[in-house]
Image (cartoon, one colour):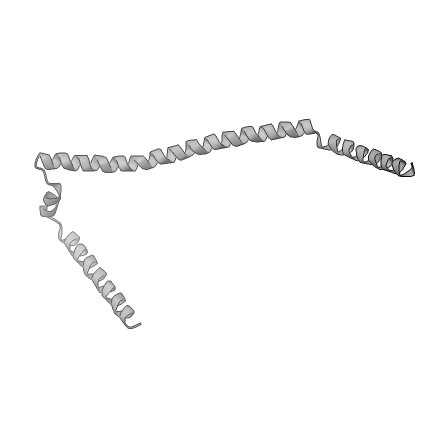
Length: 121
C-alpha cells in the first residue's frame, strides 16, 4: 500500500511538471510557428528557383549573341563579303604596326626566358 501511495505521489509530481512544461511550450503557438516556417521555406524555394531561372536566361543570351554572330558571318559569306581580309588589307598607322610588333617580340622574349629558366631547374 505504501508503494502505491509513493507511486501515486510521484505520478502527481510528474503530472504537474508535464502540465507546466506543456503550458510553457504552448503547442498551439509552436504549431503556428512551424506553419509560418513551412510557408517561408516554400517562398524561399520559389524565389531561389526564379533566381536560378533568371541566371540561366541571362547565360542563354550569351549563346544567342554567339548564334547571332555566326548567322551574321554566314550571311556575309553568302553575299561574298569577307570582313577579315578587308581588315587585314586596311592601311594601318605606323604607331599601331610598331606596337603590334613590339608586343609580339616582347612576348616571345619573355616566353623564351621562362622556358630557359625551367630547363635549368
